[in-house]
Image (cartoon, rainbow, N blue to C red):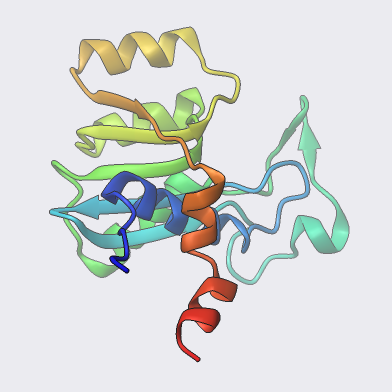
Length: 161
């Protein structure tokens, strides 16, 4: 039996889904994976500043309906690149939810050339305009049940017994 590998887009999106499972915000779990030349250079999830309390422990700190305690997954991934000296110009990002306007502007300014996302989430019209203006590729990735099953730990254990 020939085993079929999942395509790159789904592989990197599954990484983002896994990262989202580390999120500490109660409102939405988001994961982001930055990739250059089919190599993961950074990952992030939404959560508090290191050392601060987490939303899952003390609730969200809401101002005007937004949690201001949380650093977005995209920003955490970009900051990881800055911290460890990874170049973002020309890289791609895989994010579980369409980036907010502020994250979109940050990604464009960082030189991200392709934004792949799993779910639509308050897609801002101005963000869409900026993406188009900067000629950044936008790609909605789908994950089907069979793909998720092939990537599951349970399948791995079954295949390696």
